[in-house]
Amino acid sequence: MKLTRVISLKMSGEDVKFLQMKLKEYGFFNSKVDGHFGQNTLVSVVNFQTSLGIKADGVVGLQTWSQILYFNENKNKSQIIVEKTEVKETASYVGIDGLKIYDNLLTDGEYYKEETSKNTLWLHHTAGGSRPDWSIGSWEKDYQKDDNGNPILDTNGSPESLRVATSYVIGRKSSSSDDKFWDGRILRAFDDKFWAYHLGISKNSKNLNSRSIGIEICNYGPLSMRKDGTFYNYVNKPIRENEVVELSNPFRGYKYWEKYTELQLENLRKLILHLSDKWGIQYEKGIYDENWFEYNDRWFSTGGLRTHTQVRKDKFDLFPQPELIQVLNSI
Image 1 (cartoon, rainbow, N blue to C red):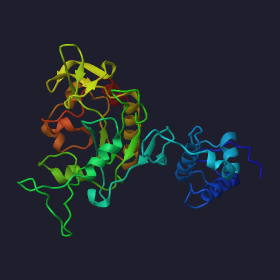
Image 2 (cartoon, one colour; image 1 turned 60 degrees about the vertical axis):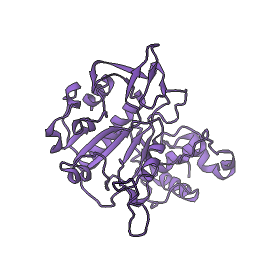
Image 3 (cartoon, helix red, strand yellow; image 1 turned 135 degrees about the vertical axis):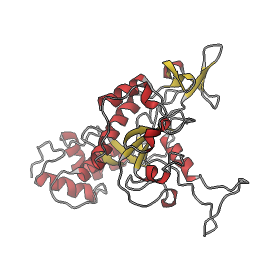
Image 4 (cartoon, rainbow, N blue to C red; image 1 turned 90 degrees about the vertical axis):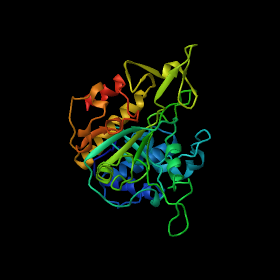
């Protein structure tokens, strides 16, 4: 067989079948070998390319074919070292628009393994640092407490989980260093067909939480400017000036905020489109402005695209950054 064709998503043929067989041999593909380049094959190709440090675009051209044919000879030279981070470099989903999702899954008891239909996407930010894996890790440590602050135990004598989490968390570049590894990287905490609490409301709580998918953006939120012109977040950590956005009109009492980055916003757009298409979620178009972020009772009963500040007067996520408003209106 001559492997001269460049192959990609939605193509079929004997060369695709050969590709699937080799990827299965190398441990990257565990689906049926059928000669059709579908989503599972795309994910496998991207993960194979990533493992070698070559362009991970899911397209099998000359360079990727060469690696497919000689992988066993080169594999000892192809280890990726990510600077002092423990990260799974295998994507669980790859979209034709370049969307990539990586799994960093919670244990089963940290969410409700109950399948529900979805009608709403809720947008949050973490009120924390740049790493989405740390946000997910903090949910593993959450447990219910009694009035005295003592853990409530389950039938096995273990602390009862809060089951508070969102399905997706989008990382951020560091606001205090040049580290950009996490910028825009999307981690999945649990399958979006299941659910967890993430709104912290009493009104219509179970219905709104279980019928929705939560998306967190790594961001500290509101900032304070000191007399010397430097900016600090609520945990007294300095934030670089180029990572600060000044709003024309203060929101929830604050004028200065840590920016949502360009890559965060671009991948948020892709994720919203992917999830809306997957679940058939209908959302209003072209309505997004500063007023959309404000609290209103009507948000407790409607589906579509929503943000935490619309149902919580005490929350700051999300805030009306002009670039975010532009992205929402572009969807």
